[in-house]
Length: 266
Image (tube, rainbow, N blue to C red; front, side, top):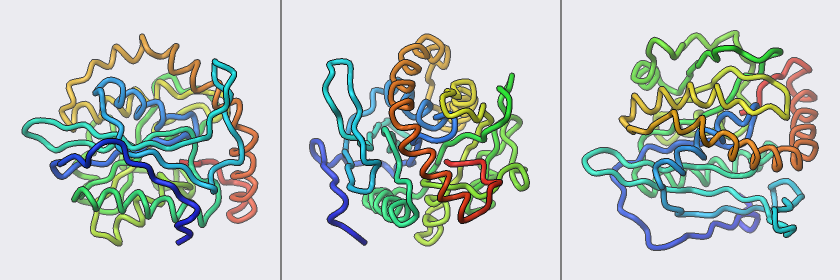
């Protein structure tokens, strides 16, 4: 583990969390996971716990509205509830784009999960299609049949085999590595348009419907429609800046390794 490559800064005191459920939503196809987690963080008024930076993140900076530069970061937030399990939420601007860094990052994330005695991980992502889906389907897969049965319902299909190839990136690695630690993990993947500039907000909303019901979050999803313009503006700026730096590099590496039919990156 290249520990010098990673910097994790804590904000505030360490909270006491009740067996938190960990939810990951980093940039990927359609930014489905990022849109969903960013909305949860805002809507639940989650508190910032960690900020993660790394020499393995894309070698670029963002230019903000004040014409100042910002390094890409990943953040962990938490939300405490009374009488039910708490949440840890992972969001950010980027995710690692090479194999070693993705493994290292995923292990460090799972270290955080274990630190707070978390026993359940949820990852969110998109499935790229050639056309914009009118009503995106949501699929799930996981590292145990038990957790799949727990979350599967009338709008979530567990028939993912044959729909996508390998689940690349943090969204997939967290599932596999979590099983080594006896942590149950599941991934929700929503259909979205596969264009790198497209925002899969409809797919994110379908995933949020599932989480809202299963986790009893009591959030108003209609507010997502009102916030779409703000989310879209912010994501489009950063997606445009990073698309060539990250997506093309990552896809070339993956296609070289797995073949040209690779069509999904967490």
